[in-house]
Image (tube, rainbow, N blue to C red; front, side, top):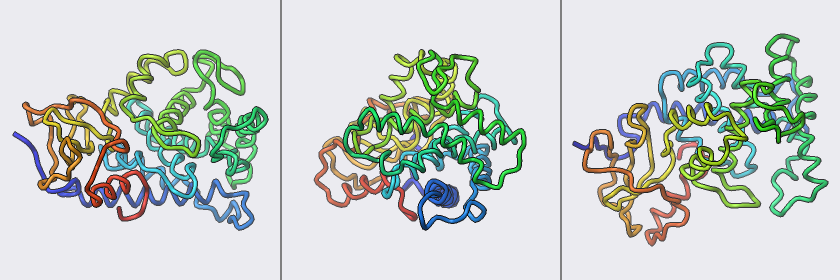
Length: 335
């Protein structure tokens, strides 16, 4: 029996609106903090400090909310970093909860994720360069780690265990388990557990989103590559846990069912990760379905995911449907 509804917001409008509000706050905080060096920037004391919004994210994720996870598929139009930062934070918190990080430790993890690229505030234009960077430009971008640690002192944070942890974690988010990372070429257990989580989520988010200089890769393919190819970069246990908690078809990704119909994943099931809830939008020929609906594959024995699809490559003749798909890729309040 299929669990259907007229649209993905039916029965979940409040959850969706709450998640959108929190995500919007996070984008605002990222935009303010990462533009701290701009002439028109607010003083550090007046900035939208992210701790409160991180606590809101944490509360939603602890309650099992998946609307926030679905928003991780979005990008921000003015600078990719302003969407990347909230996305990495949400993903890091989700994985952190899955491995048992809770309470104030989870808040510290969230802050470290939110601030881990803080040094890029010195290089916003270079970070978004549309052409291949030079060796010198690459060296400058790598310096953002040390610059970010120094910039922490711009904020009115008292010296504390949390601030010391933030410094350590931010300094290690680009280290890799095989020792090929930077700046310290640390290995395995030399890397703080929070830095291992954030480093992996930073990579996953970047690969699954469009950048000015390259196309994106669909989540299913990135997860497959992580499983098969990246055990020397990331902790194998973290990779397994991430796939288990997100599934190979994460919220916000697109799939084709065995019927040929195509839709977007709206939620996953921990015990049936390959049988998500899917909002069916179009048929196999790219035509808008007259009866768009949610199908819960966990309750639909005759239906299953045939494959993951890249919705940006589909041939779609319906202008309205094409606009809907394009809108789903960008963060615009209210969409």
